Length: 118
Image 1 (cartoon, one colour):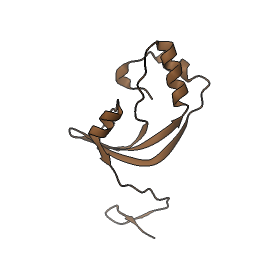
Image 2: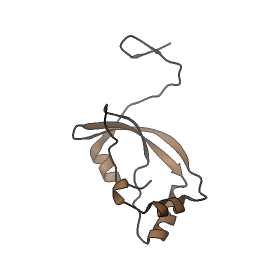
Image 3: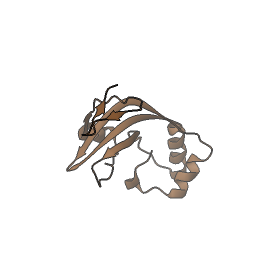
Image 4: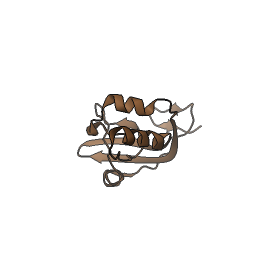
């Protein structure tokens, strides 16, 4: 919910979260990110408790905490790392919509690893 490049104090991050309950809910929006040679697939999510957490953190730190795009990284390039997102503008500039429909399993795969329909 905050970016690692901002280097916030770890104790402040922990203290702001004490007593809060966070619920992560996927919103069925998937994005393919690309930055140079790095690529990753993310799912955008809604996080209940996020606003209270950010407000507490702002109070503790005495500065504005940017609201970063809430997401979960699903896949990266082999050996890759996630691509940091620090604003909605970066999300728009680095990503495109990914048409992805996740189907509940169990799945059967063919020899090439493609999912076979039942």
